[in-house]
Length: 191
Image 1 (cartoon, rainbow, N blue to C red):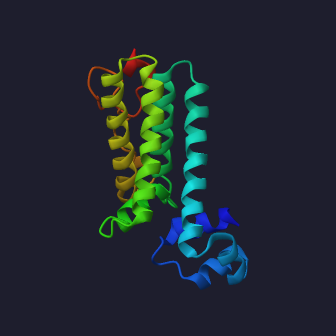
Image 2: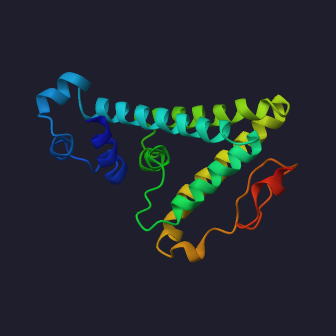
C-alpha cells in the first residue's frame, strides 16, 4: 500500500494528490488510512521514508559491488543519467518534494531535506574511507549538487531520448569536480 502511495505522490506531488486519489491508489478505505497514518500527511511521510531507505540501500549496493568507492559512485551517477534519458522520467521523489514545498518550508519539506542529507552523509562516509574528512565533505556536497542538477535537468533531456544524453558524468573524485565525456569510463576519471 505504501508502494502505491509512493507512485501517486511521486507522480503528482503532495498538494495535487487528493485523499480520494490516495484511496483509489492504495485500495484502502479512508478510515484505514487515517487509522494507520493519521492523515494524508502521515502517509506521505511514510512514503518519503520508504523511498529514501530504498534509495540508500540501492546506493550502498552499487558502491559496495564496485571495485572502488569512486567507481561505485560513478556507476550510481551514470545510472541516474541513464534514468534521465527515459521518456517516462520522473526525477527523484525527494527532490520533487523539495521543489514542490520549498515556498512553504513546512515539515514535509524539512523531512525531504533531512532524507537528502542522509544521502549526502552516506556518500561522505564512503569518501572518508579514501580521503580526509574535509575533502570527503566537499566531494559529497559536489555529488549532491550534480545529482540535484541531473534530476531537475533530466526533465528537459528526457523527451529528446538517448541521442541527447547529458555530456557529463562528473564526479568530484579528482582534485576538482571534472566534467568528462559521457563515453569516458569513470575509472579513467578518478584514477
